[in-house]
Length: 87
Image (cartoon, rainbow, N blue to C red; front, side, top):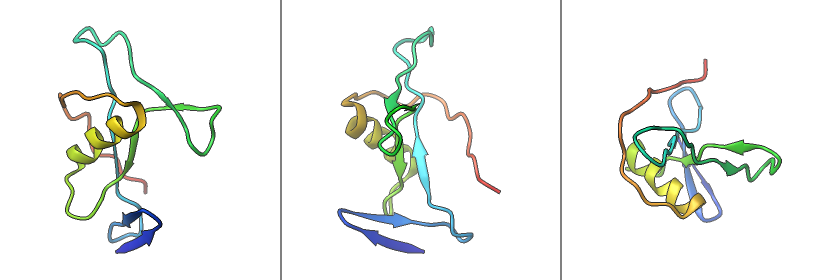
């Protein structure tokens, strides 16, 4: 299912959940520091950068795009921690 919103198109899975992707960004292989950004909905909360998957976009591209958009950081993907679904 696809729904349009001003300046973006939202993609939903067959169960009606919005498809999203996110990254846990670390500065070095030591993984001692993690990048967090403030939530746009609740500015008092710190979250990992992420957002909605666009049509025909792979989740890995979404994750790296969102990090650049939200934190101004470019990097390279490492390992996939998993795919999480709300039940």
